[in-house]
Every structure is written in structure tokens, then in C-alpha cells.
Image 1 (cartoon, helix red, strand yellow):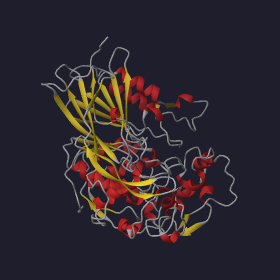
Image 2 (cartoon, one colour):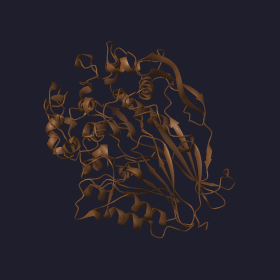
Image 3 (cartoon, helix red, strand yellow):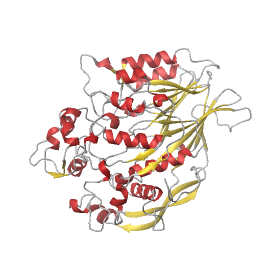
Image 4 (cartoon, helix red, strand yellow):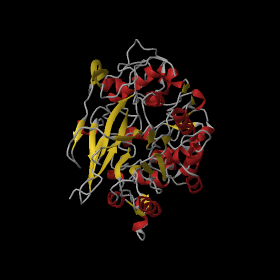
Length: 526
């Protein structure tokens, strides 16, 4: 990639803060971003008394946590952007279409590329990528995501062409349209005009790749249509075809639209449509196909963690030992019956229990769990047979098993598009920290570094530091409008101002969820 770059900087050195007002709408202002003073590391004492890093500490590894890239084919006919306009916030949809369209979505791949390039130039031993790597379970999205992380030509749009509602000739002012003309985003939130942005976003580019070993994890958007529906077969022809729905069918009665989406979504996509170029590369992928795509020559580590057993069974859980003294157990929390929240099956729960058995001594490795779903979203019982309620296991059981093992110190996850750190306690003292990191696709578009160290007194010290991609803070007129950094900077600015997703509110978490040091006792304290 080429274009304007700053030196890689973590948020300990500088943070992004609201800048000048660039537009005024009826419901809010549109603001730029600027660099502000860095955020110092604070100490959390949930599990152990606060203490600074001391002499004799041993750093095991620095992990990078990257999640929820949502590499998206924004013109796909199998997206539910058209349903959001009437279904968002309604009881019938149950939240399924509240957040489908993003004004910045044409530039999501550029934001991901900027973050990958930033992490590539930081001292990282292993990157853990915790799912929702793509947006709509499509093969072309999968190819673009792998090219981003491994390095290579990136083409998120079929044939480099965008046919969707952000085009000015789509004639729908509900969406933000960057070209001159009126639309809802400009009227309500003061969104800007960027003539020619669509053409610049259509151009492919080459990613240099992470350069570090990285582990993959399955998220609900990687395997489910719209991140919710397992009914791929019903939409297989639509997704590769030459018609994109623009409205729900006239007169369609959807008293329970969510159930329709989860069981047979065909009627939802049967309304008025516009002609688009057909694209066979948009075909849906299943779990086995997703895993197989990662098991290519040159992947570091092999298969990006996925094993031949994962490939044969279409499962996504495995063990990886990146350095002496540290073990990563990646979980597959996708719920096979559909819906966006998670669970695990009994075989996986038994596997986890076996993996952790006996890991409680000073010579045993510390353990990091990684999954897409967080504890608060591992509650999905949709489609579970009432006669077999124990078919799936949820957060409470998983945590009980994890907390039995003193060497489990950290659980990395995503899904919630927010920065959050929660302590889980053991009865005899200590516990583990659950660390959720914000999405790259939405504000604040961040990743996280976690340094894992053992102090001289035998406690584990986890140091969390947020990372902004090092595109310019201000997406101003002085940038090369065709460069990836400039487009990534504009993506971040648009995400901050997204009034529909309320992108600027809360997703960054509190200061206790970002740059913090956390000690975990590795022996009983009471």
C-alpha cells in the first residue's frame, strides 16, 4: 500500500478526539477527528492488589487482538440493507436489521488494511483474530479477508464494481450517498459530500499482510446469512444472481420477521429489485469451506490454527502453543441453528475440560481462551430441541470449567463491537479477565495489544494497550484521495459520525476497559 502514513503509535502516545464541526444537520453535527494526548495505563485491582511491573518479570508474549473486521461485499443481493429502513427497532425483527447498513461500509476493507499494516509494524508475537472476519458468509468476502491478513491483491467487490444504494443513480435518499445531492444522512446529521468516492473505493489494492503468525476464529457473520440465518440454500441462487432487492414485498405480512429470516428467508427477498451484474464468486461458504480456505501453503501457523480434524468435521476449535509457557485455546461459539448469539456443543465443552485438566502448576503453560462471542452473548438456545435442553452449553458452564483451572488468565472475544474488560472470580481468590475488543468496522475502529508476563512474585500481569490504525487523524482535503490511508481515515470519521448506529457513543468503553494493567494470582489467596 502507498499513501500518507504516520509512525505507528498506540493510544498510550496519542488518542483520537472530536475535532472541528464540519456539517450541521437537523439531528446532530458532523465532526472531524484530531489527535489528542495519550491515555496512560491504569491499574485494575479486581483480582490482585495494584502493583507496578517489577524487576525479574518475564514477558511470555505480546498478543494482538483483532476482531469484527466485517469485510463486506456492500453490493451483495443477499444483504438486508433494504429491510433496515422499515424494520430497524421493530419488535417483529427483534434486532436482526437494526445495524445492517453503515455509511462507511464501502471503505471497510481500507480500514482493515490500515489496521493490518499498523499491526505489521508493531512488536507482536501472535495475532488472535476473533471472528466476524467477513460480513455475509460469502466466498468473495472470505478471499478478500485472507488477502488482507496474509498479503496480496484485495478485491472486495466483484469485478471491481459497486452496484448498490449508495450510488447516485440508485435514487434512494434513505442512504448516505457520497456524490452531490440530498439524502437523509446529509439532512439529519450533516454528512459531507465526496464526489468520486465510489470510484476510488472500487479500486483494488495490494495488502502487505500482517507479517506475524495469526490465529483464526469463526464468528456468526462468517457462517450465517446476515450473521443470523443458517438457511443458505434458500438464497443460493439470489446471492450469485443479477437482481438486488431494494424493498420488502408489497403487502408482505411479517408478524414475526425474525423467525421468517431464521427459517426460510426467501419471502423477505422477493420484493422489488434492481438489475446488477451477476457474480458467481458471491457463493456462500460453510464451516468446512471456511476452514479449508485458511489451510493454504504459507499460512503461519499452519492453517492459521485450524487443523485437518477441523477441516474434516467443519469444526472451529483447536489448541495452539505459540511460545513456551503460553497456550491458546480457540473456541467455536457459533450456534448451528441460527441467530447471532452463541453457544458451544457438548463435545467441545468436554474437549475444553480435557485440555485444562491438570494445568495448575508453575511449570504448566498459562492459558488464553479465544472466541467470537463474549459471556453475555453466549445464551443462544434458538432451535434447541425441548427434549434435549442440554444439547448446547452456555456461558455459565464454560466459565465454571475455565475457573477450575488457575492457569486460565485471559479470555479474548469480540461480537459486541465495544471495548470491555470484565473480571471473573474464583472462590479461593484470583480468577480471569474477559477482554472484549471493539470492531474494526465501527467506531472506534481499534485493535488491542495484550502483553502477557509473569512477575517475580509468581503473579501473571496482563497489560492492555489500544491501537488506532495509523492513518491520518483528520480525513482532510490535503490527503491523496485515492490512497488507502486516506480512505481508511475517512472510514473512521464516517463511523464516528454514524447517527443511526450511534457510533460515537460508548463503543470505546471506559478508561478501565482500554489501557490497563491487570494482575492475576496463580495460586490460591484465601
